Length: 308
Ligand code: CP
Ligand code: NVA
Image (cartoon, rainbow, N blue to C red):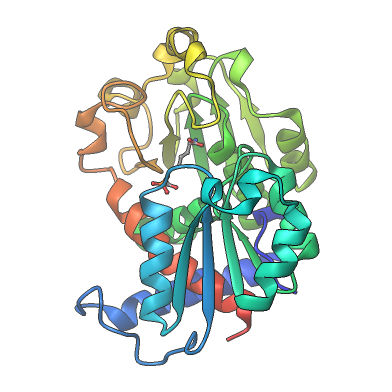
């Protein structure tokens, strides 16, 4: 069964096919209105459950629109309104949903929920973000990078800020797509050793550099994300902000990267915190292309999962 749980768990050839297929589907739709159906209707007759245990704008809308463009139907479910939020086991939920739907996308807190869902479902399961990873986002980011600058293989990607779930999926992707990763941020907020170790084992040159200005030298891509993720306690906000302020992506920092270096942020952004508006809205920023490409990348992921 083709679950899409994490980038390092998916074969590199399949990842490449997904990116290529996303690019082809995007081109095929160019100029059409958002609600217009795709010419082929690969998801005709298919029902997709979209489960959210955390808030979402992009993931929710892009999955929903993507399924509809491909001729399928969606069911939006909030974790707290399901029996899942009231004591029913994940395993039983997975078994039951598998009798009704053809595909499950879940955004949850603990990674173990995703894994258990996949273990017990008879249909493919897609990771729509957990506390530890966000693979769909990074597939959209690879598509975005390659649209603007060509193959990402061999490029230098610099992550500045919190070594969070999005950063972890970049480390997974570095191993599968063959790019270098530099992390710059406070020691307390480095990515988990497991992610760094796995990337190094996959042959990635992973650099940890405390000085953000040194880190961005020669960067092809600079990426950041919110300083307080949905799974972080608000009580840590002030401490996190104090630690992360030196790692803000601003024009001075971007000036140290290659002149054509792209800037990415998965959004939602807290402007003037992790990145300034001058950078977010600057010539090298592709943040809204990333958001759009969630749609195209996830359509390709769903087709791969369903084999259609
Ligand atoms: N980037 C992203 O996943 O955004 P949402 O939280 O709005 O889905
Ligand atoms: N790191 C962020 C990403 C949101 C898309 C979070 O987990 O809240």
